[in-house]
Image (cartoon, rainbow, N blue to C red; front, side, top):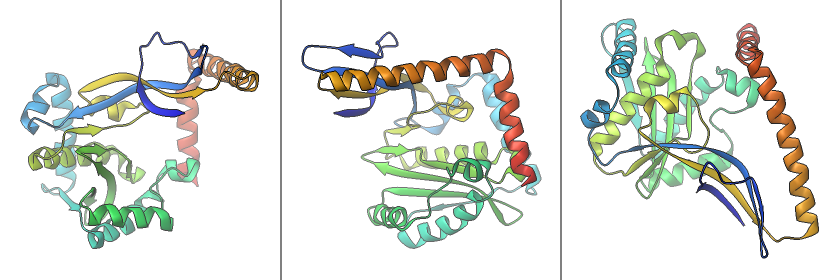
Length: 258
């Protein structure tokens, strides 16, 4: 049995061998989200004055760059989502995530079919941000039983100085709050400055396997733990030496040259 985003205590051991099952925490993380059962003004009021000023400064900078008006769009219907996807895909090709990790918005037929089915059920939103009439950032949000799911966000790296991802996220949240329909904005698993900035709540969760306590399963899991600990040790050394951020900058530098 596999359970994703299962609530855990930070003290939960990675491997627990019981009489009837083995529990293995494959990964753990802070699951971040936003309570949408209030209004946008109350949401913004939860932030510190410093954070609010930082967000407003980024919005003001973008507005100045776009001649005082922010051009953006929201897409709902299947036809609108097709247009959204066509433009979002062009932005996605420019991102280093897509070029280095193939992590941009998908373009395969299965994804498009699912996107259109969600649109027909009014269960997806697509947002685009423009600068000088050109699309520079996209945000793709499926919706499941009142849960708005943070799925894909991307922006043109040439416009990074204008914080387009932050601006588009804020515009999308203001609209979602105004619709007064949803319960939570779910940032799902994983971490990052963007999620930390906008989230208001978090809980410690993990992706957990429950397996039969066979000798084979025990051996496989212990081998996986050895590999995992080795990887975490190497990562810790890199962080301690201050190399992680330098490596990230080098990767982005290589991307810009390509």
